[in-house]
Amino acid sequence: MSEASRQVAVELGDRRYVIEIGAGLLDRAGKLCAPLITGRRAIVVTDAVVAPLHLDRVVRSLDSAGVRTDTVVVPAGEGSKEFGAFQRLMEALLDHRPDRGTVLIALGGGVVGDLTGFAAAVLLRGVDFIQIPTTLLAQVDSSVGGKTGINTRHGKNLVGSFHQPRLVIADITALDTLPRRELLAGYAEVVKYGLIDDAPFFAWLEANGRSLLDGDHAARTEAVARSCAAKARIVAGDERETGDLRALLNLGHTFGHALEKETGYGANLLHGEAVGIGMVMAFDMSAALSLCPPQDAARVRRHLEAVGLATSPRAIPGDNARAWDAARLIDHMRGDKKNRDGRITFVLARGIGQAFVARGTDEAPALDTVRRALAA
Ligand SMILES: NC(=O)c1ccc[n+]([C@@H]2O[C@H](COP(=O)([O-])OP(=O)(O)OC[C@H]3O[C@@H](n4cnc5c(N)ncnc54)[C@H](O)[C@@H]3O)[C@@H](O)[C@H]2O)c1
Ligand SMILES: O=C(O)C(=O)C[C@@H](O)[C@H](O)[C@H](O)COP(=O)(O)O
Ligand SMILES: [Zn+2]
Image 1 (cartoon, rainbow, N blue to C red):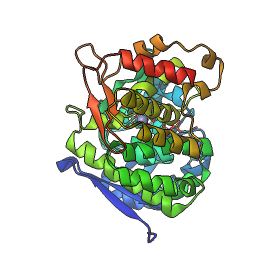
Image 2 (image 1 turned 180 degrees about the vertical axis):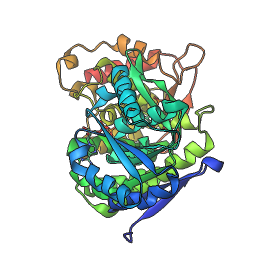
Image 3 (image 1 turned 45 degrees about the vertical axis):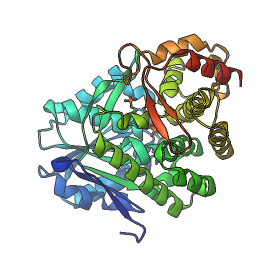
């Protein structure tokens, strides 16, 4: 293993698992996974973009570790989190005649991870799965914590399950093939950790974010490890989001998921891009409510702009950009899973690194925020 390899543990008692982070880990996937695959059978689920880039190495590595491996390739993109796509995946998995000792391996971004994790939760009433994330977003966020699921016309991730992986393998060099737009989208979720409760990490990103995005492996390893450590700590403290701790990971998502729903989960707006815009809106709302210094809100916007992320819905391309309706976006937020007692739950901030969950807040300041964002 390379010198720069790191391990982060998600402490969930007898469901504890490790996140391996480093360069060249795809070639070691077999060795790392084999001890967890007692049935010696795995099905790797990946997408049509990742398959030609990285699938062979993983399958070869599993084969040489004595794990018989089948593969299922799904279309790339958020469309694979639709009901129909989920059904097709389940049938394709069953075509391979799995048994309860068969382990599913998700090789890809957050879409493959969320979809495969949900499939693992319900296949034969539940089998184990392993995450091998290949996008920055998946390495820092979606592969960790066990939120799995699919979208419906009612909104994002509304059908799913908490199902923790047995292992996460984040090969930093897999990111070398990732398009810049996808890297940037994942970077928004990295920034999120700084904004939630780690102001020094946000300052580190202000200094190192550009070189991370430009391909600096050491900076990428550091950012993935710090992000995973933050997420692991939060998940261990509130696995099923029953308290207010895990909901902090939804910073930017109340607004962001509404934007994704409004734009139809298409290529015009990636999840991470929506989160970036949503975090700017959450800080704008916090500043407007005098909860947060306006300078902090400006600093968040400045950093996201500096790296090349959109900070307003107006920057989203496509016809939809000309048909925004602030009240409709608020209505989308009324379907958010965090909501309680018919009121929208927001994640707001008292400053950078000081996010908190706000329940029972009026909708009016959120509507004002959306209107300001649409006018920006
Ligand atoms: N479960 C969670 O906790 C959680 C957290 C954050 C996001 N998510 C979900 O994750 C999804 C977004 O994930 P994503 O941003 O990874 O998108 P994605 O899975 O669609 O991947 C983005 C694109 O990059 C391609 N790709 C993946 N790895 C590549 C590589 N190494 N080289 C070249 N191309 C590669 C994919 O084929 C795809 O076209 C959303 O559905 C979001 O809701 C879930
Ligand atoms: O892991 C979590 O908890 C998160 O909220 C991480 C988010 O980045 C992620 O997008 C998650 O899928 C959102 O969850 P949801 O419960 O709001 O659908
Ligand atoms: Zn997210």
